[in-house]
Image (tube, rainbow, N blue to C red):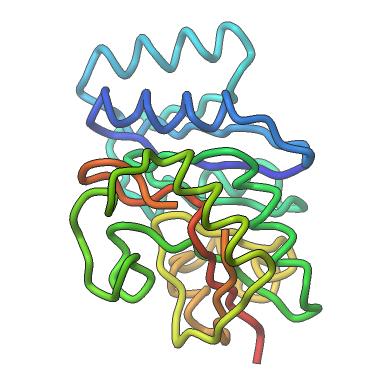
Length: 220
């Protein structure tokens, strides 16, 4: 079982698009969506998450006060410390078999720590080139661009100097080595070596859809 952890604070439209895309795209790998409501001031977000939790479509964790991204992530990761997790920003959108491809890339190597997808807004992991921070390039929608990436770059990997934290796979063994409960999850990830594999960018200003390419952080 894989935990897909989504810390949430503001942005109802982006949050709905993110969570709905995760729930609507079926995967071979079993997964559980863990939404961490970081004391959102938006009643629309609160109601939306309550509705999904009541339907048992997500596991909802709610902070009594705003604790920020890192503490929200660590709280979500503490629910099932024996599981692999994907940390997903709430302004992302996923498509097709995004999670299956992330994990195929992750388990292609015995020393993988994390996997980070490329995006239309992810610094060194941006597509079509480093530093791109605009909408989805070209005229294809996210799902169509994702399929193109999946067929063109299937199984490819490239070394990277660091992971990018908008959407990444974090191995259970890596969290045990790094002690995620005592320090930033992203800091723990950058303590390892990184490579990149192909798995798409999200529309507009959203961060990413894990279907373009993914980077893999490997233990030294």
